[in-house]
Image 1 (tube, rainbow, N blue to C red):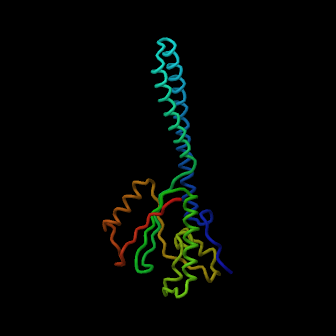
Image 2: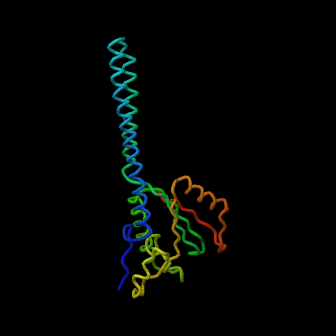
Image 3: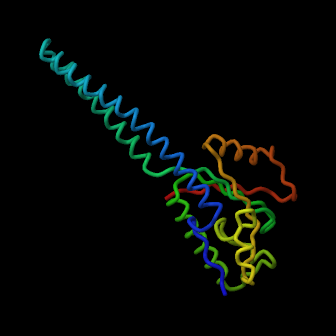
Length: 210
């Protein structure tokens, strides 16, 4: 009997964090919609004012300038709304003492971005394990992705006690409210403010979104 492959939807920790992110995101979208109603009214007023000024003064250059500025503003407004389609989350995945180092992955992106990273990382691990001469002793079974297994109050181990191959990894998962808080933690690790308790060096990896 083999363990079910974890996904962002069935892994309790990730599912809870993305649910929270979506709820917060929807509240922000509603606020933006209210602001956009006000902005649209201001744009309509500005257009009417520009047309009135042109009719009364006949200054074509001033009319073109005002309309151009309004067009730029509308484009920026539309772009801002497009960026609200999917929430961005800020996370850190830490694996301590594996391959004689502490590996810290920092991620800022969407759920889709993280899914792509997990898939790419899994493929890379499986490929490396098939290479001739591969073997890192006890570390072999602990080389997985942040999504695969995680022993914590959110872990599924108690629900699957008969699964002999369900082994918990050493991942520690962190979620940040803002990008600034994520960068603060990253800088603390780089500067050695957050000390390593196992004397292994820290490797910091920023996950690049496709």
